[in-house]
Amino acid sequence: MKSMHPARLLTAALAVVAAMALVAPAAQAATPAPGYTQFTGCPSPAENSLVTACLRSVITGGHFQMGSKDVPITNAMPLTGGLDANTGLIYANSAGGLKPVKQKVPGGVVGLTGLTWLLEILGSEALTLYAVTELAGQPRQNGAVGLELPIKVHLVNSTLGNNCYVGSASNPIKLSLSVATTNPPPPNKPITGKEAEFSFDPVTEIFHIDNGQFVDNSFAAPGASGCVLTLFGFIPVSINGLVNSQSGLPSPAGYNETRQDFDTEIAPVSRVYP
Image: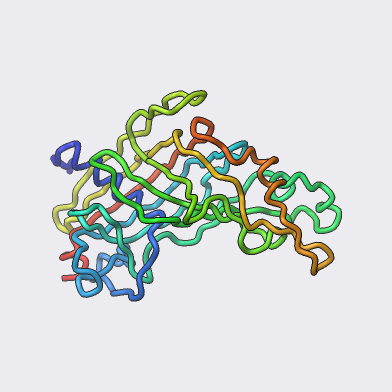
């Protein structure tokens, strides 16, 4: 049946769940009760007494564009954790947070660097490039209608070394996700997310938030760092400049955009860990 909760509370719940995309796990992992195993990763009261609700969200689609690179979200990203309703902070145990799901970057390493001669040496398959989003700070619910997410994007291919990133803990990409209409700096134009469909199962007390979409096109993206091409197997050469020039980085606010589709479940921690 449809929930009768106030609209502002529902919107806040959406924002809270999106935070789980980037939550870093803690040291332990409790086992939820039967029927609630989808919330594995939510800290039990013994692990974290501040958690009042358990959350599971799946990012089902969308895209992330920064500079001239636009990465489609084609592989679903499952997220789990728990909410401190008093502060808006999100926590996870060792089984929670965001699973390290790779998203394929169009153009691969050659498109990222412009080094076409790599195709002759390694071939196109070895130059497939993936992007993995990681936390670069503490996510926080922003009022009742949004969420602040500091992130960094790991560019994954052995040709680039192991530490090729856009964003860092000291210089993160600061997302401010919302289902409402944005107010970005030019040249970007306002875009609007999608309110989710809400339902409640009175037997399990699981609250469902489905088919929603968060948007943000007001964030800036820093330049790449840690990207290294090793020549002849032993000569490391920094290619941060190549990555930046080919990708339009750093990219100021008004030139970037993300849309994130999601389905979510929320349950009282007392039901998950009776």
